[in-house]
Amino acid sequence: MKDITLALGGGGSKGYAHLGVIRALLDLGFNIKGIAGTSAGGVAGAIFAAGYSPEEVLDAISSVSQENLYGFGKGPALLNPTGIHRVLEGFLREIEFSDLQIPCALTAVDLKGRTEITIREGKVLDGVKATIAIPGVFPPVDLDDYQLVDGMVLNPVPVGIARSLAPQLPVVAVSLSPEPERWKAVLPWDSRPANPLLRPISRLRFARAFDVYLRSMDMTLHMLGEIRLQVEKPAVIIRPDVSHIGSLDRVDFKEVALLGDQAVKQSYAALKKIKKRSRWKSRS
Image 1 (spheres, one colour):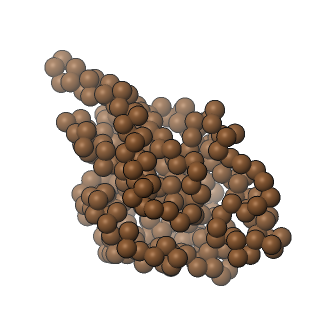
Image 2 (cartoon, helix red, strand yellow):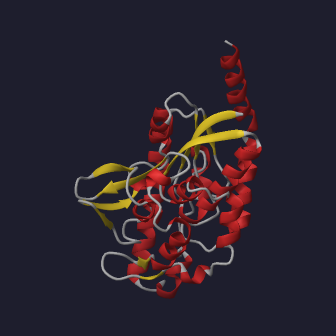
């Protein structure tokens, strides 16, 4: 059995692929000794670290009405995340980071200090709420002296944080963005709002402007993620083919998870090298 740490990237509805990745890695005999997660990756990582198997999570959320996950928000946010917070409470309740079965760290960005924050203490639910607070879409989360938003703003795939959890172990990164050579094909640019949540107000100039903002930010995060992956150099990068899924799309959870399984199979050759290096080290 090979010990690894995971760095799970953000991507909204694409993030259910992380459950398939985790499931497939466990089936291959990998032992996950730590998880760092950003945004959707933080959700999957925290729930797994709390002791839930991917199948348990998928079975539980498959009965959830996606119509009720988000509503139109008030104040500095387009949407109200009360519905998804309620789902998260069902898994995490009063669990503290110190209660988790494996070490887990979540990323967020403090608007006051304009800096990346790593969350590893306190209530896990509070950290998850912060790491998914997409700027402008969901309201910021006030935690201690911070005003926190989605960790993707500065760290789309938290490889360095995963490495800090167990420096001696290889990091397997899961990026929900495609390879740079595929960006043009999967980032269409037209005048129609891509996000179904904007359709009720799609004729409003505000909705169209916000859609342009979201698409532009998506490209920025793709580039930032690639730069950080090149600098931080995980042992393996797994990329589920989720480019056709929007960040807030309604999806079939189990079908998206299967895309994670498939991505692990496609990365098997690289993962096998990790196992070989492990066996060699154990003999030396």
